[in-house]
Each structure stands twice: as structure tokens, then as C-alpha cells.
Image (cartoon, rainbow, N blue to C red; front, side, top):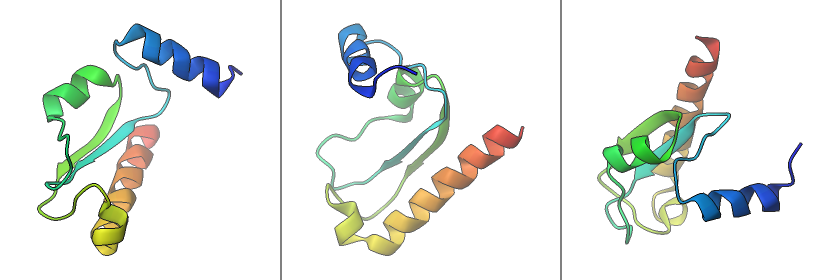
Length: 86
């Protein structure tokens, strides 16, 4: 099993697509400084399980909109479970 720090360094070095073992989940919050597009997320991650743009929240979404943040986390995990079951 590779060391996490070394694995992270390799990802940073490559600046390419991240080949994830599990699906990546993205929720885009409107108040966040950087808002990646779906296209960017799909190009950046080999397994994009979940992508959703919400209408509330910002950089501190878990604090600002805890119910929305929790529902997005659950939706992302459900999506990953569905991908793993298929």
C-alpha cells in the first residue's frame, strides 16, 4: 500500500487526471471562491460518481448550511454505493 504523502506528491507532480480507486464527489456551492464546472471535474477525475450545483452555501458550507451539506454528503455516498454495486 503506498504512503499517502508520496501518493499525493505524485498527483501534484503530474497535474493530470487523478485515477481514483473510488468515485469522486463534487458539490459546487455558489459562495465558494472557485467553482469548478462539471467538464473540469470529469476531465480531472477518472471516476466522477456525483456532481451537483446547489443554490446556497459558500466556502464554509458545512457551517453555513449544515443540512444541505449533510444531504449532499449522503447523496454522494449513495451514488458511490450504486457505482460499486453495478
